[in-house]
Image (cartoon, rainbow, N blue to C red; front, side, top):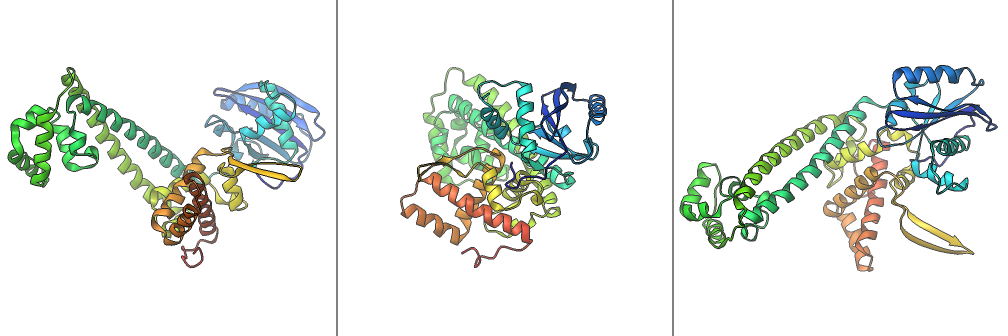
Length: 402
C-alpha cells in the first residue's frame, strides 16, 4: 500500500491516527506549523462533525490532504472521501509510519502524538495512496471473500477436532480410509458407526445394504476393510463422550460446508459484475481464486502498474547494498497478507494447469531453486498476467505468456 509517485504539495495536511472507539487528529500547514491539535475525538458522527468544524476554522486556502493510517478495519469509517468536506483522502501503510518514527529517532517510543507527527511528515512528503469512493460491488465481493476465508479456516479446525475425536472412539479408521472426511463412505461411518462394535456386529453384507439404502454404493473390498478395522479397534475409555462430541462437531462441519457453498454461489454472481472477469479465462483460475485477488486489489485504477502490486504484497526481496556490493535476502513481507496469499494462490493455479507456467517452474526446479523461490517466481508471473488482463479487459492468450 504505497505510491511510487509523490503526490502534489498540499496547503495543509490532516493526520489521523485511528483507535477502536476514538481517533487522534493533528493539522499542520506546508511549513510544518501546527494549526490545530493534537486532539482526540470519539469515532461517532457527532464527534466527526465537531472536529471538522474546528479544523475548517484554521485551514488555509488550497488543497487539503487527510492521511489515515490503516488499522485493520477500525480506520474504515474515516477512510471514505464522503466523510471529509471535499478534502483529498490518502491511506498510509502502518509499516511506513513505523519507519518514519525510526527516522525521527523514536523507534522504540510509540505514542499517539508521535504517530501523528510521523503521519504528518509522510503526508508532506507526498506519500500514501489516494482513496476514492469504493465501488459497491467490490465492497460486497470483498466482504463475501473474507467471509468464505473465515469459514474455510473454521472448517479446517473442525475437521482436525473431528479426527481427534474419531481416534478416541474408533482408532484405526483413518488407516482403512485415509481421507475419511473427504469420502462419502467415510462420512457415513463417522455419522452412523462411530462405535466400532456396532459396525462389527452389522457385518460387511449388511453394511453394504445399509449404504445402498442411503444412496451409496460400497465395494465389497472397502466394506471388508472397514469391518476388519472395526474388529481390531481399541477405543479409549472415554469413547462414549468422544462419540457425543463427534456428533456435535459433525453437525457443525455440515453447517460450515453449507455456508461455504452459499458464499461461493454468491461470489460467482458478483464476480461477473467487476473488471476481474477476464481472470476466469486463465487455466487454473476459478471463481474462488479470482475473487480473492479482486478482494485484495480493490479498485484496479489505484495501482500504477504490476510492480506496485507485487511490492504491496510483500513479495519483493529485501536488499542490502553497500560499497558496490549487493545482497538480496528473503521476501520483505511488508504489505498486505491478503494480497500476498492471493498472488501465491494464483501462482499455484498456474503451476497446476498452465503448461507454460509448469515448464517455467520445472526449469527453476532443475536449476536447484528451493520451493519458496519457485512459489514467489510463479506468483510474480501470475501477478503480471492478472494485472494485464484486468487492465486490457482481454482473454488469456497462452502464446503471449509462453
